[in-house]
Length: 364
Image 1 (cartoon, rainbow, N blue to C red):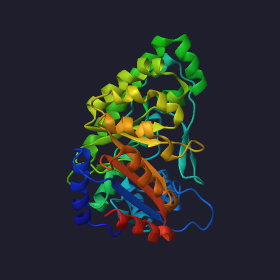
Image 2: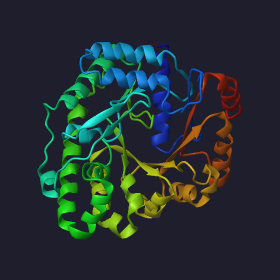
Image 3: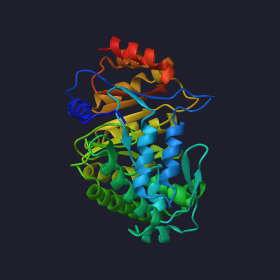
Image 4: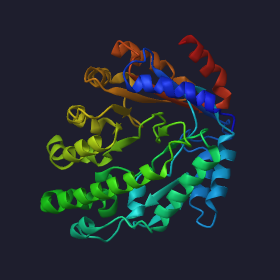
């Protein structure tokens, strides 16, 4: 993989300025995959499927998984502020660490966690098992990847998932909605325990990641940081109102942000926007990642959202899907009145390289 430690050294300083609100330009990351031979999804290309298959092939030695990671990443092109990142997937893997059964979807390159027949009180007593096979596998692979790349790959914590989302996955979303009406105390105890297990897993991996062997911490949101950072989320929040959000989750969000040095909140879809004011009230939160969602109004149709995020002193991350969406960057900057504090994560194919490079030159 042709990504040098020297390149990482330059990017580290750029990102540290961004985290400190001192970078006077937006971060623009462009990661290109080989041209798709058939219609496909930029977010689940072959390289991600091959890495997932290797990670979840429990018979494959971790060192061979690291070789597969390198072989897959050799096919990628990193432009602008982009860089290679590794973390143990998928979102919600903490559920697997807590014993939640799962199935691998090899076609789409993801893992699906299954409902468990556990009551709220049982979930409130559930404890992270450090001997859990998936947990041990995650530790071994993380170590193997950081050893192989030795400063040429940013490493992220496993994508543990959101506290409410994990409970929703274990119980089933519709069952959890009934729980919120029928057993307020039970839901709070279950959420509190999942949060404690989240912190336990996070702290354990904080000892696994060796800062002497990585150029910086990262996550699925592909930022670079000298300090640990994590993407927090609550997709279940789309199903509840602000009062319930503030009562059940906001206290946990505050605790997460106090424990983790740098944090970003994954705001996913129009139904999550109703909670933005509460999210922005958390002083320790550093950034908000905005995903407008399929079928929702375009990225240019949310002027108040961008103004609120930047106006609250938070950083903002937005995803750009293909060169045809590059115009969104200019429009968002125009709407916000500044490019400072923004990060744009751009995905595309190798065939779009010229268009992306022209755009990057125009902004330099």
